[in-house]
Length: 217
Image (cartoon, rainbow, N blue to C red):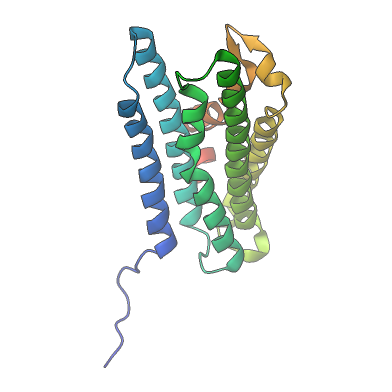
C-alpha cells in the first residue's frame, strides 16, 4: 500500500491535551461561581472580577503557548517534560484562586486569612512557574543554531524570553509574607503584583503587536 504524502499533518496529541486542559480550567472557574451563590450585590461584582482575572490569566497563557508550540518541535524530551509541567500548573490555577477568593463560613477570620495567604502564595509560585516555562520555550526558539525561526524573528523571541523571566521574578517575589501584610485600599500588595504579566502582554499586543504575536508586518 502506498503511503500518503502531503496534506495537513495531525496535531501532536500534547497540543490537543493542552487545549482540553486550558478549556477545563476555564470551565472549572465558571462552575465555581455557580457553586458559591452570592450573599450580596458586592459579592456578585467580586466573583465576576475574580473570574475575569482567572479567564485572562488562562487565555493569555494559552495564546503565548500556542504561538510557541507552532514553532517548537514537540517530540523532544525537554519540550515534552516542560509541556507536562505547564499543563499541571495550568490545571490547578482555578483551585488556588478559589482558595484566595472564597472563604468557608465555618472558619473564623484568622483561619480565613491564613488559608487565603497560603493559597495566594501557592498561586504566586504557580504563576511564576508558568512564566518560567514559557520563558524557557522562548529561549529554545531563540537559539540561532536550532534555526527554528527566521533570523529576523530571533530578537523578538529573545525579548519575549527576557520579559517573561523578569515578570516571573516579580511574581515569585510576591510570595514574601510582607506582601500579604502590606495592603493598598484594603487589598494585599501581593494581589497587585499578579497583574503586571497581564498588563505587559495586552498593552504590548496593542502597542506593538509583533512583539507578542512574533510575526513581522
